Length: 343
Image (cartoon, rainbow, N blue to C red; front, side):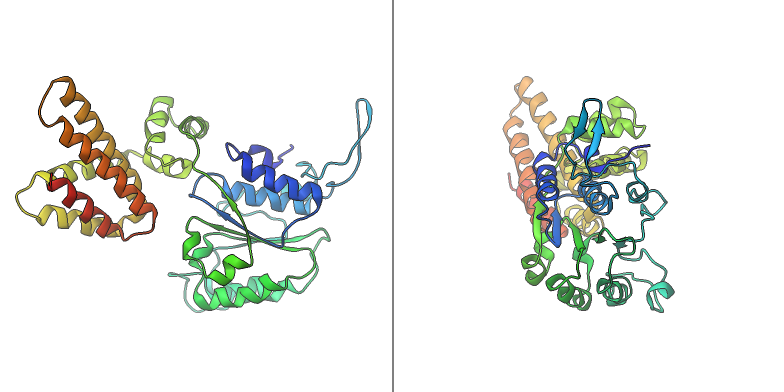
């Protein structure tokens, strides 16, 4: 069964063209930084590039219905190397020996020479064991060796510094693909040694389509796609009934905090936000949506609070910009609700 991974990448035309042009021209950078929100196709593109680099048939001429065809520099998707490059198991890992995945807590401590699990960051032990010990050697099967680093912003300082030397002087046919949703959190030295390819949030209709393909009912998929920030991963999480209930609870608590005489509800919600940073974007989007709907209903009924509700909805959208700028979640929620209360 043919599985050319890059062909499955959706709504990321600029990123895909950049990758394909590099493959076609042979000007493949030794270290890429794929930057953008989680759940928009960065990892699919990373394994698609890795697949093309190890493909046994890439660059070979083929014979079609009308005779010889020019060689393709993309992955064939059908050879043994291509099939083994596709992530399949519960940890979403390929079985090809020349594609190595780096991720916090992916490996048992003893497998990377540690006594304790990696709870906070990607340790220098993992970099030493999986990267430094292999980088100087030729690829196992001869085509290329590819290191895919998930959430590279989680590298410890010592691990990042240990990786730098290899990024500066990689071995022959050795490539790195670093994935991040927080490029500003990376060391400038890593940024300067990588070629950045940007991945944008997906359109709502694409998120909806991909969620339906994962078994989520169409109406539900369309509903959560609006709150997903263009991320299929976020949309899948939001479709979960428990998260839906938690999101509705956040909106209710936020509206109650704005209306409360004292600051206690506001401070309590802001404190909870500190513990739920990854979920906060969708919850603030839900709050902005609720305020927009309330403003619309109020305007139709010619009530005096329509303008106030609309301004509060705008404040929620502004809070999203601050959250996406890596501001502290607790402070974002405090400032957002305080501004709403001041109206």
